[in-house]
Image (cartoon, rainbow, N blue to C red):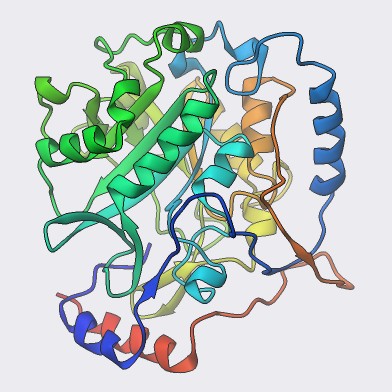
Length: 385
């Protein structure tokens, strides 16, 4: 994650244009980033064909087998910083964590969307570290888009994880959720007991929202303080050997084992950053073929990390967060954890430009941003509060 920037960034950013992402409406986001065509293309075509032949049975979250499972007994694959894109809408900003937007991620089978919000003149805005760096627009607008997707997909349970960077009050979030209309889907749990997906779908309370962090309020009982229900592994990993299964947060738990015993659901962070200078980190796109791989054979593989955590905790990760979700593809690891063959997914929104390469190793990618903007970003980030 890129560290928090002081107010100097706002002034420094005046030297270059502020990057605004286009509305997250699922249209016009087929980024033409450099990539090689992976075996996923063939696998997806095959699974799509088999899905078409399996539609006689109702699926929950892309599998009939998941309908009868409790929410906390499923691995939910998630897009880390899902609203911050590295595509044409952001001039391929190096601060972007995803090539495709949230609705494309949902179409592809992801059911966890993580975002970061800040206060922008009283508006809860989706900004990456600072609104002067990468501004993806108002949370309310984005929630409206997610609601529209849920309206059109009534058999899907979606989870949101919101990083409350500026400590906004739960009532302010409640107002935004109500204005978007998505609050009608909000689920309120009872202790650490969770229903099956089918029970949530039948009750039409199929949106789970965690916020880090808020004070719980019975008026907005569907807005949950993350660390009352979830524990996380470390993030800000800068080496492929750095992924582990130890507890990072909340600090009130002594260990991952203690958190599991207390009934908290594990969230496995699995995204690698590049260290540009000092403590300035940006998402590592070059090694994403390794980090998002479902393989269990190579250090840094998503599949290996999930396997190790499953073994150490005695339960599979409930949540997983990745950058560049389409690579790997990351969702394959969740399918393995869940033991399913998925149906009904679509990658139609993922427009990929293949690049011929003689090796299967990491591929160089443009950093995006103009040179001036990149220099401004680095210089400004050095002036930390």
